[in-house]
Length: 224
Ligand SMILES: *Cc1c(COP(=O)(O)O)cnc(C)c1O
Image (cartoon, rainbow, N blue to C red; front, top):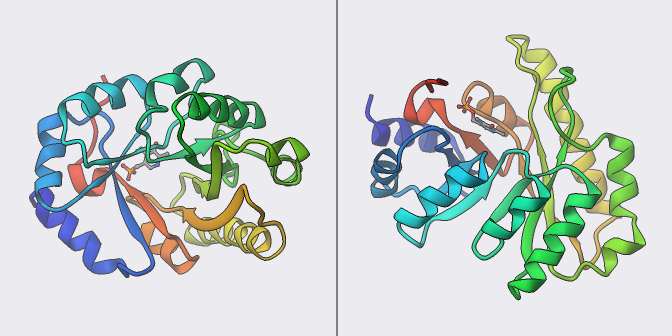
């Protein structure tokens, strides 16, 4: 199937009033991204700053770019002028640095806090304990150039659907808890970024507002 057919198939499953499709274009060249763009896709996700920058430079400027991979403090400055949403904020220190760079650019940068929900040790993200320390921090109140818009998580890489469901329900419960009890000027719970090619349908059952889908749109990636 073509990219536009893949996009159409996924969009037909999603409720457009609830869940936005972020096309994960990592490893794919700009001309392939343009093909998706020409089929009406305007939100794209990348996991590396350098790759995102080189695509940003050549692609249409009304694309909304999402950073979904681990971000190093020294690279924030490159994306700060234009990034639409950073899904992968995984430490308080990073939040502080994003605030600093956002201020230099006279912007408010939207962020999601990445929560570690998978069984695997290797995935980045806040633990539940770190999450609650962060959102209750006094220092956060003064970070006027960031807006925490929600949470992001990656489920375990497993065929076990009940495990994946359990992990999605866990992050959904954290999302709802923060939404009902911890919102303030810095924290507005609007987005729950869960679900990838293999599990976006399950994620929608757990209230996903953003699915990050790559290979189901563009085909499988070659890592060289
Ligand atoms: C690569 C990636 C995705 C998309 O993965 P697919 O399985 O290709 O849909 C989603 N989220 C993150 C954080 C990723 O790195």
